[in-house]
Length: 208
Image (cartoon, rainbow, N blue to C red; front, side, top):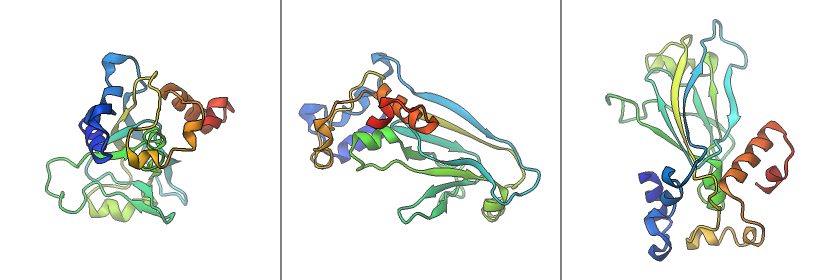
């Protein structure tokens, strides 16, 4: 919730419209069900490096934010930078090598990107196996052959939340054309992303 409050402050949402609580109030679990879920992610070890050691293909997350908890010595995560190049994401960025635990990685998801008219960009990422990340793993004391574990917290707003224009001048400049169409709800957006991913061919997929 604190991260959502900081985003709202950064977007200078009018206090009369909810201010710092604008996003957070739409994610309160007391207001109804959501797609929020905590998952343990397991990537089995590979006996031998392969020419294309992709453990999880390129994708973005569907919700508002994802918090990723990783173990030291288990890299492999890569993000797609604006130039279209895949860039490794170190488990222990410079300055954190002596920390007791790796920092929590925060990803912006598709819904928050849609909600802000693309001002906050959804992070396209993938997970690579041994041959692509062996150098990085060796540098951080891990083994390319071991199982990989992480924990991801996928944060979504309440399902019936209408994804109306965020009352921020910076956002409204980007969504003027979209406002002429029907406002979708959080669950409709989620179903649309699932449909687009798995080829269900629903109307929701076309809407998002």
